[in-house]
Length: 500
Image (cartoon, rainbow, N blue to C red; front, side, top):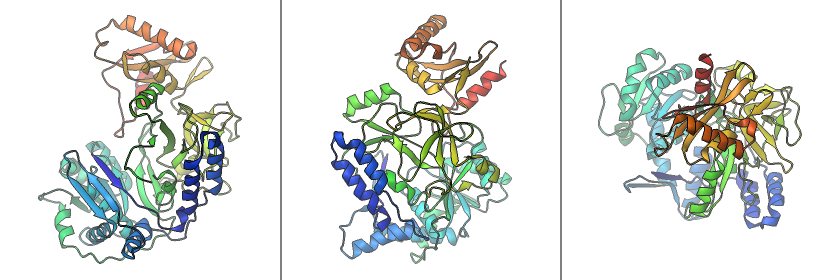
């Protein structure tokens, strides 16, 4: 399934970024460093006191097209795996989202500031309802349909959401936990047909008025809440404002999808062999970036920059990114520390506002003048940043600090390995040692485990520093992962330490 949401900018806040992008795309390889610095210098987003993406961008684009100043283009173009197609103009999206806004504020009785859990697949209604939430000031909490009953219950109780919007695939799971959710006032079903106890979105949308006035929101008003992946503990509610998401994401936006010319990856570092295989098949490099639920884009390999395989690039315009020690001091190039963003004296516009309803955890993210990401890394002499691992994931073995990603990458280079997860394991002499949980390919799954372990250990010794090799190894059929596909190393680590 593929989908396209083209919210083309029509306000002056995008002008400086657009000019710098043009300069970058026109530069030669010899000019790449200069182009990146020029982009940083010229990135000066104008953040108005009031901003709402629905009215200030989508509705404004409708007006521009009606005036004939720009040719009409799809606002949303969606195609599913069977070739079924939905294409909405900006005017059509405006009409439908206003009708959907009336559904939210009418039948659902939602008011500005209310929260709603949005569990939908990548169907047009997902984008439609997100825009409707912007129009009403409702705060959506997007989530995947892979959430279990336990996950949904946690999110409903933690957020105190007043409603759930989902389809038939998740409805029964919601019903199994709703009795324990006192704040839940309505359930909205985005599916054909009807279900007892649920409001029908399609019926309500059909009969709703298209006359709706968008609420007035300040740039710093909350726009959405995203639960973190929960790789190091219980998921936290990350609140983003109309500025941090509505404007902050412009730095990573793209010109067209008419043909594949630029590839971007984020979420987990890309192993070098994966990047090489992609280049062999497509002829294109993968531009790695780094960010968090809390931050949008922190670092990236921007267009025109030289790519250093394995590096997450340079800081995004708008962020002062540094590597700091445990006391908040900036470390020199080559020294490993925590990846941090300067927030004093001025907090960046595109950083999350807070962990909703949790001031203590919000306060704990600040060390000295910096917001601490919880990730460890280093910066080289050229200003490129390199990811080492989550602070909790880094292994301290006999005084050596070992990041799991490098060991996992080395293991993945061996033809026997499908994927792996590396964690610490207690050791009476070294304190901790490296342990690898390894999923083998079918061709190697029947090999003698002892011989297989020795072969992989020797392979890692050659592929990286010898002291980093996994002294312990366990072959498993699968690895525990979050609903977004990230490996839950903390779960494996806790399990490992409980054994001793």
